[in-house]
Length: 253
Image 1 (cartoon, helix red, strand yellow):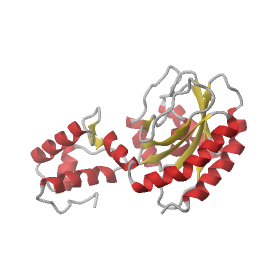
Image 2: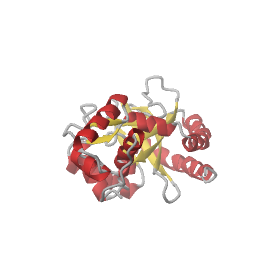
Image 3: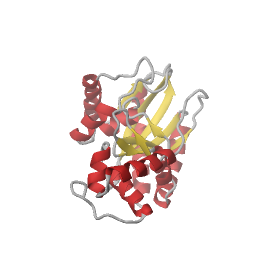
Image 4: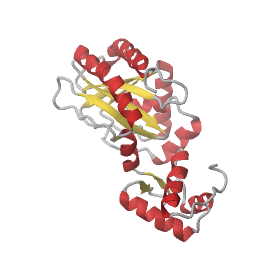
């Protein structure tokens, strides 16, 4: 129903959830007028409800004045029973990979154009920055983001390039043409590598985890100090653990 007006709920809660539903259906963001039209609400009412949602953290305002789902919604999603079971299925294999390589390991998923951390495991290196479960991860500055975006629809990539590029370090690539080349390389190779693009002094390599139709794509990542050479040599063993995670996930309903 994203292209037509929704039946309007007269309750305050119904209107709030209706706006969240609309934002959840979109790959990018929606303007105030678009949300009001699709929700069947006056612009003034929509603006007031969005203000409440923004103050709570469920919605965020983009630099160009549009609206998108906020971080709190993703954190609540990570607390769901299905997400917990998914993390429980992946974590033993992530720990085994960390033990086999001595490196930090992360598992992440892409929801719309947001890269969300599912879980992380520390390695021997103490200076590796790791996100926490539910954290949003930089989309184009990470190997996981480049890998998962390499398989996204062109419209999704184009929309994300307009709003999601951010310079994290002096080495972050923010030229859309060059980022697209990185995505193409990841698509062809079946893995992605970054060096100091998200965190200075830190490199990463990511491989995909096969998922069932309809599930969000998942990446398995190894993170190392940037002084470590030969990250691509880790890809074969990472693929074996990714296959184990995929098999374990088949039992997650």
